[in-house]
Image (cartoon, rainbow, N blue to C red; front, side):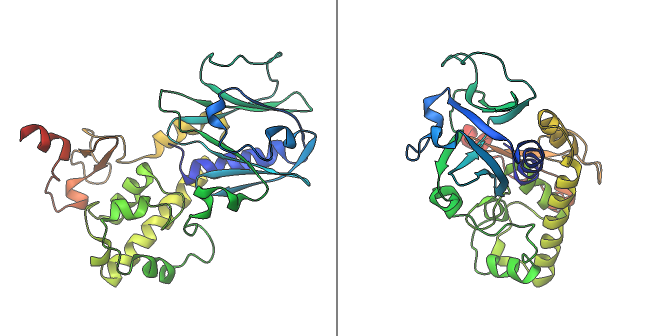
Length: 287
């Protein structure tokens, strides 16, 4: 799933390629992708792109004097830029294409979604706050005003485990499964540690790891073409998605805990005092 660093890189890419360009066609190919009906997608046509924004994991294409196109790529969605779009109108039901945006120059982008779980979401709205997912977002962790005191206030009294708290978009915007693993590894903390149990020193260490991990990921992604961002993200991860491989910090084997629809990865030596965490899925099978 694209998270804050990749979506920020896409925002910068689209800012460079879209700003000032006129949208001439918006073609929904998969009807399920559209989550709004008023204004219609045609209301975007004939308007120049004024700016591109990011809200957590949401992309927000602002048009001059018109509505905005807000996109959430979900788990399996992606954006593909094309300097020259194919001729003709794409046919529904053929492949992963969900929506196409064409510019007056002949360039544009496709939104695609792999797999059978169709969660890619596109909204045409007058204000991004009309999108429920945007309206409930917590603060952006890379904002200038997101300091350690604000972070500590968010975690104060938070009874959830750190892994779940970091992934809660209503608490902090933009962090998903991959970067929560990376942040906790950098902070040398167990994903199952309760947020409310952190000492001030531990809160400071987690804040430093959060800012550093996300900032470094954004810097690695900056300037990378949209089509290469997935590979760049995977290459920069130290523990997430690397179960069974050696930890790059201490050499211990990276372990995994599996859930019904996701998994987390961690290093026992770096994060849990050398103790493996119980794999919930395996535990259920042994009962």
